Length: 375
Image 1 (tube, helix red, strand yellow):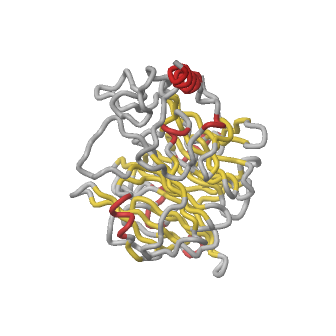
Image 2 (cartoon, rainbow, N blue to C red):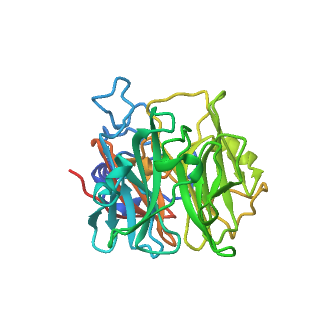
Image 3 (cartoon, helix red, strand yellow):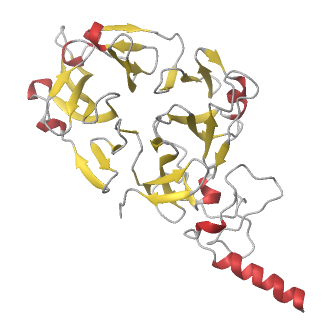
């Protein structure tokens, strides 16, 4: 009888535990297979690591029910002092007071560019108030044909002053360029005192002050993350024929990543260049599971030796198990960002919601706070 009462008490405590009670969360380091989790909102006794039985976001507007959120904030990247964070196309979040700053490209860019919209991919690597604004639109090219293109501007978010930095090869107003490559990041070469814009596909790195491209890849580049101290450059490539991604760190392929991180899609460095965060899935590339969920891997560059067998993650964070939240599998290439030396901004949705707000978490898997609030 005593055994029954003791077991019942344990079961009761497991049932009443909520997602907000973070004191009983498991160790953020990847647990042993013998450890089981209990979903606070699942039927009693259902293990939280059961993909088939635990709740998963279901998009009622989706035919296949992928769990894609109806609305999603992103974490594209913070300002150099960490006070501001890009969370949407032309929307910036002030992290000090969680207030929104809107940047309307139509109030800044002259009408002669015929832009139809714009988005902010990143902050300046050297100035807190400046962002890179990418605008798209349509114009007539030299042959009189209506074509689309992109123009690039460095904009001060407060004074609204701008400087155009569209590469000459893209044509006047950016309308001659017909490639697929998008802009990934903006860095500053402190030695040469030059700004570099890093593009995807096979476009390469654009040196603004010299109006030329360098480091043009022959492969399909899909992501690049350069450490603030310029010591490390990690690149993600994608082989469309086998639907598999692979990585290079400072030009050398990472076999370990190819085995375990084939479906990773977002990368970020801490400001001190110590930590590298990667989010995605480590399932086999030939497995399609609409109920899959993302992880976040944290690498400590002081403890792991790059390009060696010892280059392994220090923490593996699984929001589904640790926060009762989910990272959508179809996220953007920039879906997480360091906002302090040891905390990340990550868009996550609840299992019973279709909105992905941005949340702050520690690199060791502790929940901190919610940053955006969309109802």
